[in-house]
Image (cartoon, rainbow, N blue to C red; front, side):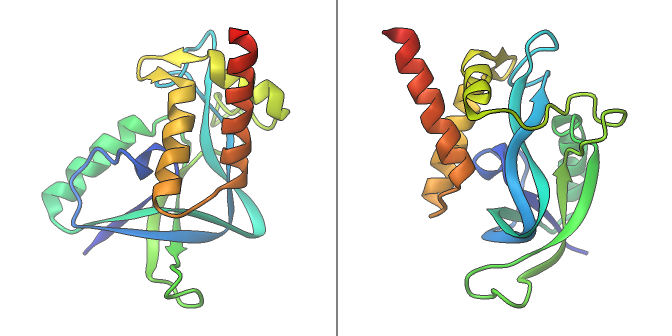
Length: 186
């Protein structure tokens, strides 16, 4: 049995596990938002960074990358790795992947997707929406064990550009962080 994992954040540019195939595509009725707090990678418990999660929104699409894992030992290793890496995401869902060549019929069915819910009991790091300026300032200032939060944002922006995707939320936030940065430097 083959396993598919969908990446819409750092998994797009840094999966961190062995895979057999990589497929660019999108999930339906979800949008990418910087609403999840990161206290273990791109921020600290005292000053969380912001990372992406998926928010249900009928009619929306979220582009990313699906990874196919076939070998049993690779699946086990990937699952163990992802359970640690994605531990601040409190829900695993199974969604279908569509591509430009298969906009009506899923190219992949039931691929695994980690997401962070708004349930503050299950997900203590959920930050939720904020103004673009507030999110930009937080992302600019936050640093965690994996590095600066702004690096995460810029790598996501670059990775999406490389697969031909412009995500308005990511682009607006990246531009706001650049603007905040130039204001801080002047």
